[in-house]
Image (cartoon, rainbow, N blue to C red; front, top):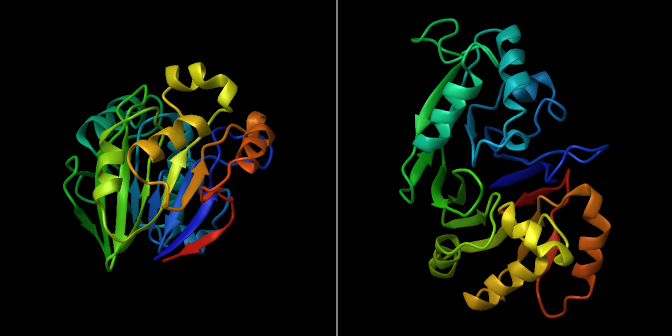
Length: 254
């Protein structure tokens, strides 16, 4: 499995790009960033887009992507998520008011964007990958994911504050190489993190200790650029834990 980190920040400021991971060239996990990074030939390879939730920093890349594919010819994508999330996307975004309804362009039968609903906690096959959506605690309906290929995999919390089911499953799962976890704010803003459905390093470490996950490698993501140096300073003084910042532009292989 090849995972390209196209964006991994909690805001789009300067060179910091929003959440988007490209897996095996064909599957996009969240769509905060895509056309800013990929050229047209690589955009044509993207066939599946998995969405964790409907906040715009995880969706905004959808709009220029679909528009670009329309201009290039007969290409289409499959938009994959749970019923609640797809319902918001269809009714509140691709509704011919905010953006054209590409689920009916050029026709319902040959639409540029096809919606595929997945069930919570039920594994779904997407090409050679297995995807499992896990509910997490955010301010809107949101799911994290277990992503696997040939027995190996990783987990992604998406945007979440203190939550339970995700970490229970992380404790049970075998063959998980690492977890990508939301750390949006520094420790001093833990109240704001909890209120907005995010984590700080101290909240994350508390979960790792509580669920017996201290030994698993962790990549932190969704850091707000304005707090980046402060979060990295807090990370530098944590001892005995395998926690690193996710690096925009990096490639991880499993």
